[in-house]
Length: 475
Image (tube, rainbow, N blue to C red; front, side, top):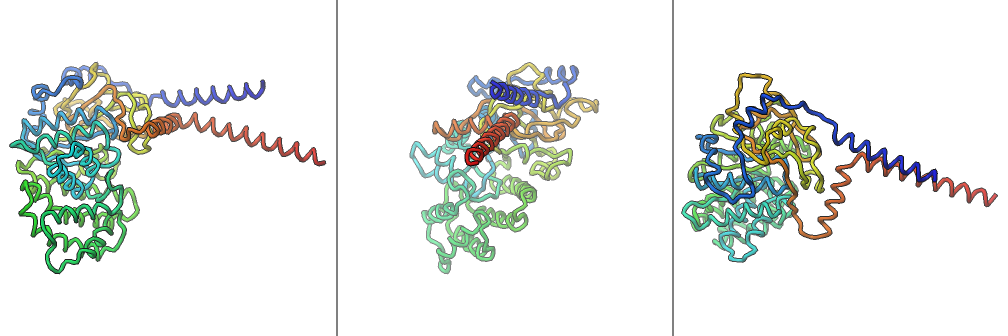
């Protein structure tokens, strides 16, 4: 009976501590005057209704003459965030003339993904292109809809071209950091013509393979890139459509950028993100100027990359560099969630979002009585320094942490979704339940830790008592 009582106390205490930590408020309540202003200016979004262009006409005034629109996400793996941003992409493309969509990954991968869409008639080509282009965490049904939309436009008079501003070659679901991407690239080039005389293909392949994962051999890699560039110049005129040929011509510089990232960042992860975002900002402008026919581009990435870092407390971001360079030529929309369940993009486990009371930006946005809405924060009143959108608060950074944010200084627009749901990147029953179990352990880490420590303590006590009984018997 005594053991049961102790066990009950441990479990009850763990649950109470876990609940207390989960519901403790870490943000200020929004001011009533702020809520009134946001409510009056919020544009409701009905995510259950089929897309209709007139529902997104507010983007005309919001985006204005900006030639670069960034679409951010505070959470990588949800069902709602890709779908609501796809509607923004569709309006920007069909109504405002944006013809290029760039995501994280690498330009080399997205060229191969577009090659798959252009050349294949297999019904699975969209899934295959999704795996070639994007990280594993974007291999979800919601992100497949984005790829399907790109595919649906390829035969129209105004196609949307998929590319990437990023330089992490080979880091997609199809390749997972392995040099197989080099073999697929070389095989794709052979379809347009053989390499010029003097280029030895084995050395070309091995030199390019060294780039993936920063495997080394910088001199050999640089020589291989030069050879690849010479080969591409001979075949690019045969590649159709023309924009696809232009993107092919950019692959050598994408590989050089990857080499630069490896050389400058080494194994320092903070330095890696700093250099990566610096190069990515440069690439966004290059894609706008050299790849996009309309010279208008949509960049899709996590908030850590697109936010303007107004507080100066984060690694200088792609958005910060672009904002400094482009000014009003850039418009950035952040996407925020109030509650729900997601698959965490950093710990890769399905879990509930922490209480909205812990994150001031979401708490302020959540005070508006809407399931989903858009707000043009760049046009909110700026004369009251105490307004919630002008003061530093916290916002979600995946599910495990938050980041200092000044809403009207880090973003130009915001989409708020009251409740989100996970979009699984693997349909296997076992994988989905493992994600849920792991997510539960992360979500209730303190409680789980108390129970585990208590269990270890009980186990150690039982072992000691057993050993003492054995000793007594022998004596």
